[in-house]
Length: 239
Ligand SMILES: [Zn+2]
Image (cartoon, rainbow, N blue to C red; front, top):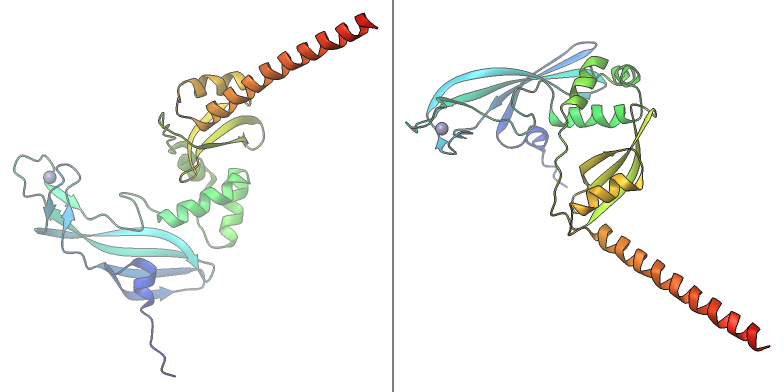
């Protein structure tokens, strides 16, 4: 059997980047990456430009390899926006694995958030350091503070859950869009009135229909019990 060598670089970072150097010490790994892109889309006007302007280097912390703090040094391109009416003159190439101006890969940020859900920020920072992630408790807090929860008034199928925030001191009601399980609302407390107000603003909600049916059923049962009591009273009266 012939074995064909896999292009791991492509598997790790996608076909638009090539890895050209790897420097490893006792505690850190530095991976040097060069972009192979030849065009970029202007975030302001939406036009595509392939007019090369310059290169720039970004240092981004990534998910640790071999439990060592891992940094990517990415050489990416800047392009000129050729749309004369556009205010953006220089377009910075966007990277598929890290958002603009972020110093961590999206994957690493997800890992940090996942670990810190179950621990205090100090605890998460310590545990993460054992596997090679370098992050302070203040930075974890800043990441949390930046999370934006976008509600969707048109949501049709949602899930609901009790969650503890601030590590067990405060409780909230989390509502998820069941299509992709992303958080669309975090309501204060776990009380029914707060949920009721939210449901009133989401007319297509499946929960709203279920609650309406439950209320109807409750009314029907009340009526049945009333009829039953009336029949029992009538029977007793007869005998
Ligand atoms: Zn533009």
